Image (cartoon, rainbow, N blue to C red):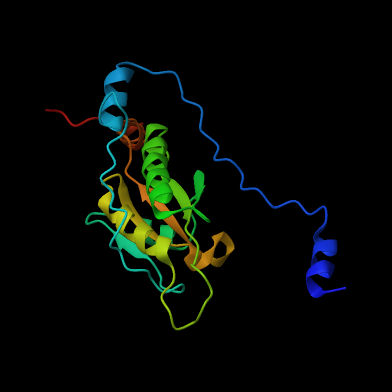
Length: 197
């Protein structure tokens, strides 16, 4: 019996693993002018306008640490994000996707997270193939690094702690919605007497 025949005999009945379907979040009931907010978030009645690039970005090293924050983000907030101390409210797994599929998924995932008022999400981009320690093979990682910087909704991001995927994943801090800002203001002012004008 040849090696091929032995292999086929051992593999009889084996079923390939399937990727879990991406779960869609359920939409809350619109409050106030929901249709105007929806149009503003999606870019128009035909769907979201996705301006993210899908070619020309260099791959990164598998162990390269992604890190970015916009001006105005407090040091303590960014430190807490880096340390993985914020609750992860949603995840997106990009493993085994093409650059184009990943681009569309990242764009829609961030817009959807903003719609639901999420602040901290995790994107699993992987570390690339393990061909050689010398080569930069993390293709999706390079694109995710660029895409997140190009999305205005993203305030900061940093490679994850080992428990959440290490340099194969990234924590993303999203901009606060107007509703969350109002809630924070009310919480801060609770019990205080407004200044006399």
